[in-house]
Length: 354
Image 1 (cartoon, rainbow, N blue to C red):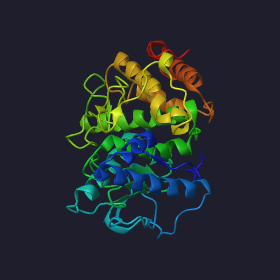
Image 2: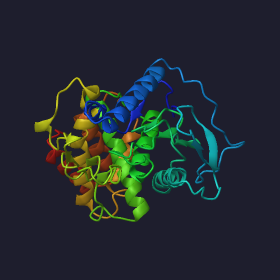
Image 3: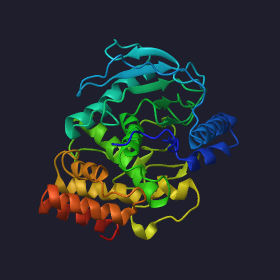
């Protein structure tokens, strides 16, 4: 199994088009945090593209690997600097710190580990017990969270538009799934393969949330990033998997641009070919499959999607149709004709040819 790539693109949870819009706002309380976030993101992205990491102390590593089924978490505090990893403030097994961001990061890293281990028998992100390292209080008014190939990084938000980025368990599940993808299919972060990358992260982020709450597919809200926006923002969440395009409609943010069907696919040179936009199409396909199969989504459609992600037939440049065909093949081979038919109907429902 390949290790997560140090040269993979840095991927933040907030789409660049959203930050670009906020950066143009007349109110400096809105624009300045977005501008600073875009600058930091570009610096981090450039460093990763050159396969060079910024100067930093190495995160503390355990003397020996944790046994399978046991996470190894370490949460650090950057104290509003951009130095990583920062000061270790909560190690595995330590009591709660009293700092909401620290304790949310610790718990949500554990919840993500628990889903992947309990349901898919995956020992951490790389399948080999990789320690789950997080840094909170990164930067000043930093409006993003990201996986940098070695650890999670969380901003506090600006308090105007964004809440702290540790608040939503599905956001942490989403970002850590980028590490799982790096270790498996290494899907190219461009156009349809990039939108698949984003969609798979939304899928497993949603499954982390549902598993943590004990919800089945029909009970779940299928919102990604609920709680991430401040109360005055007209936004239910960052994305809706059930109804792509409906998550927000706000004067500051604009309207959610995600399509739910291939007829509305967005061709754009921005956002790496629309990876955060067109991911709405496979997101809805998963929602349709999960609700058709009923029961817990992590055990039904989630099992099919996980098996497809880890299947050696999945190309790193796969488009929607290629991934859809693989989910059908996996469903037929391992899960039976009823599951295969439900998955086929789901892809047909979003206009993806199989």
